[in-house]
Amino acid sequence: MTRTKPTSTLRKIDCHVHIVGDGSSGSDCWFQLPGLWKKFLGRMMIKGVGLPTSALKTGLDELYANNLLENIRESQLDAAVILAQDIPYTHNGEKIPDEAQFYVPNEYVANLAKQNPEFIPACSIHPGRPDAMDELEKCIEAKMPVLKLLPNCLNIDYMDKKYIPFWERIAEAGIILLTHTGGEMTVKVYDPSYGDPKKLEILLDCGVTTIAAHSAGRSAIFDDDWTSDLLKLFKRFPHLYGDNSALSSINRARTLKHILPVEIQPRIIHGSDYPVPVSGLGPMLMGQLSWSDYRKTGKIKNIIERDYQLKQGIGFSQDTFTKMDQLLQKLGK
Ligand SMILES: [Zn+2]
Image 1 (cartoon, rainbow, N blue to C red):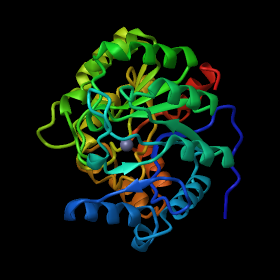
Image 2 (cartoon, rainbow, N blue to C red):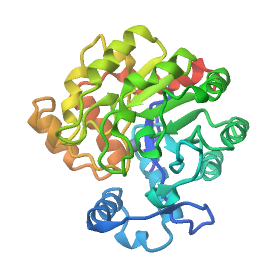
Image 3 (tube, rainbow, N blue to C red):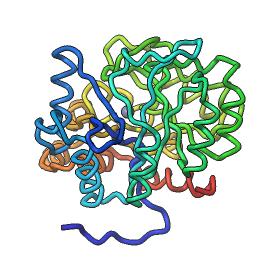
């Protein structure tokens, strides 16, 4: 049963939700899970969102999108930013599709959002694509208010000056960049240094409102810790934010202590990184989540809702849940 949600002027939004698909509905989505570890991860995530693993064989497009919609509707959140995913390109602008693990076209995400107000569409465009500017115009036309990029996995060097016109157009159109920062373990990485938030300086100078996903935190044990650099950048760039996506997971919980202080929280935006599993074990072991909240959230099957309640238990303010809507309204979206 869908519960009636209280009406407030600002919506509670999850700013970081992945779409995956197999093209079975004509979406042109695809995914590949090379090797046993990736297969295991894929199956674990599909089960985690409440779908049978047989969904990986066929029918994934509709099963995944409908299940996500149901999870949002049954949660205390109002909407989620759903993410397209481009493929990597070489520095000369040639496609490298063989190395990509999944692809989600902009058009598919735009169409899902047209049908469902709970979905806010984020496009994904490698700025080195030969048709990058044309694709950007199409996405502006399709009213996609967010651009999602994983520079370390898509092979994007944000310090490359040839991308300046691209960033200028994004800033002018009032599009928010949601960019991966920090370490990464789920998707293949080309150059880990591209996850360094200091690389955002050129596009921040162009005026792009930017959300640093995972607040530049570490994923693997020996990753560089760039969160302190992000906090320094917050002082210089008022249009820079961080998200707390995936930080309830055991490998990323170390980042929480850096972004929980009251003076930092106004720059933090709620995100889950759905379908990445969240258990609360990491925050509980680090003393940031009570045993009773850990037990209580563990019983919640819907991981959109579980992550929301975990973030509340950890101590994120109500403002972190509505900040995305505040940004969207400020930019006229
Ligand atoms: Zn993500």
